[in-house]
Amino acid sequence: MLPPAAERLVHELERLPGVGRRTAQRLAFHLLRVSEQEALSLAEAVREVRARIGFCTVCYSLAEGELCGTCSDARRDRSQICVVETPSDVVPIERTASFRGLYHVLGGALSPIDGVDPADLRITELVARVAAGGVEEVIVATNPTMTGEATASYVATVLRGMTRVTRLASGLPVGGDLEFADEVTIGRALAGRREL
Amino acid sequence: MQVERLRVTQFRCYERADVTFAAGVTAIVGANGAGKTSLLEAAHLALTGYSPRTTNDARCVQEGAAFLRVEAEVVARGSSHDVSVGFEPGVPKRVTLDGKSLRSRDQLDAWWTCLVFLPDRLAVVKRAPAVRRAYLDRATSRLEPAHLTEVLAYTRALTQRNALLRRVRAGVTPGAALDVWDVVLAKHGAAIIAARSRTCAALAPLFAERLVALGGPGGSTLTYRPRLDGGEKDLLAALEARRGVDIDRAVSGTGPHMDDVLLSERRRDLRVYGSQGEQRTAVLALLLAEARLIVERRGEEPILLLDDVLSELDTGRRRRLIETVREHGQALITTTEVAHLPEPPDGVLVVSAGSVAPLVERG
Ligand SMILES: Nc1ncnc2c1ncn2[C@@H]1O[C@H](COP(=O)(O)OP(=O)(O)OP(=O)(O)O)[C@@H](O)[C@H]1O
Ligand SMILES: [Mg+2]
Ligand SMILES: [Zn+2]
Image (tube, rainbow over all chains, first blue to last red; front, side, top):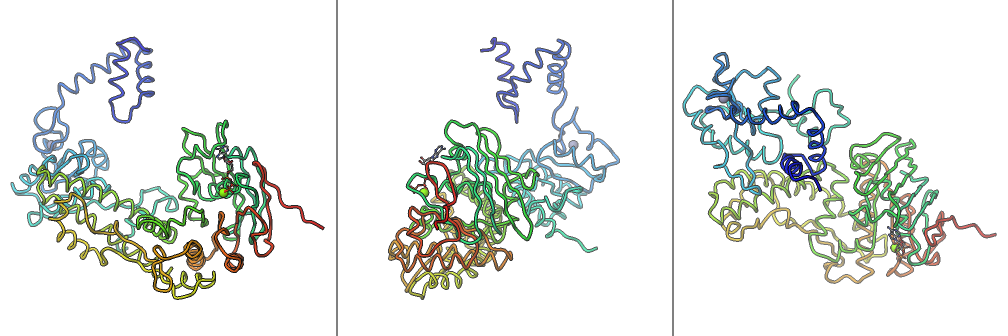
């Protein structure tokens, strides 16, 4: 048995996604071993992120203030909206530096078994943004999972006739060996092939 | 393909065993509980990465031992390969091919095929449609690997749609939310129906022919019975038409999850009218038909692992079975008595109390 305060820390860490009991204990022991300053800077970072970061009032990605960095950047192309499931999905797309439009974070994907209905996602908010005008293309970049696909087709349905809706192509990972790709990935890449 | 050697460590009743196999038919002979089925199971585990007997690999580890290992030397597509499968409870299974560790055991399926008969496979003829669907999906996946992914996707979509039906019935969600799930279900459902009917169409004539070769009276058929035949559009229309009923019952009442396969002989359903021996012969004919199809499609014969196939069969059928199997390629057949074999096999392994040895030639 651990002393109550240590037990509480383990318990809190265990609630994090992907962290089991053993990992939680390892992390807790680590925090007890490092300098007090180092351990407290983690606590401070958690406190600060909660105090300062909220959701962008336009696209619902993370924002320090009313608008996120993308929405407040005047150079971004306002005619394109890229729809993603979670705020963290914005990061890999931004890293490509090839998308210059704005985002819309749905806050999840449709999944009846988890009790997630259309009303639980920010879909009305997306429709309102498109209805406000000036949007020429909505690029749906939900995950290539079943719930992501279902969400994509739901979004396409509600936006039908309002604007052009496209779906992110999925295919072979660059640098990946064809030999080691699974048949689904190869099948998708085949279906999404282009003229050379 | 051919399995030339199998090495077994701490597997079931075997502390250690090292056996070589003849081309053609090898009989594995021994008393009840001697370890015949276990040897077939070990061969299957080494070749495919999983046991045909249990999904709980821990049961295969010899009592008191910490881990198991099975290794095989295989000749396939003209070259030799070493495959090894190691398992320790609580640790992911390790499958290596020619010294390289595989990401998933499914990768072995690209190299060779193993068809197995265990007495519980009689359920394919005897039991409920679900067993035949599972068999048909396994057979289809062996011919078209992408089928397995479709089946998993369909199953997940079905679970989602059923969950949604409950929510709609409870008034939590509007019925229109079903639209997208109907589309997903219809897409995967249509792919499954198409693949299953391709398999059945290819298997049917071979099944009829094999059944006659095994001593059946002729006139046997294998017919795919989809609950709903058609493509994506038909499936979607059917789902929409049933929506009211489905909401009331909170379950999806149509689609490939309700398909069946009819096996008949002399116009009679083998499930209902077949005798023990007839049902057993039908399951074996199905296995041999699939073996033929695999040779046609992949250019290489699968290995046959036949556990306790000879019981319930009369001497005529036993003789025909062994002849047909020998014609086909390599097979391992277990039996309690060598005398049950109508003709001398190409090799005999005698199993007793967890040890295996080739039968020493007399004279
Ligand atoms: N994990 C295990 N560890 C040790 N022994 C086991 C294990 N699992 C099964 N056994 C034993 O292995 C022995 C051989 O079983 P197996 O099923 O191979 O026999 P068999 O020769 O096929 O018999 P039968 O003719 O009755 O089918 C049995 O006595 C069984 O209890
Ligand atoms: Mg047995
Ligand atoms: Zn924003």
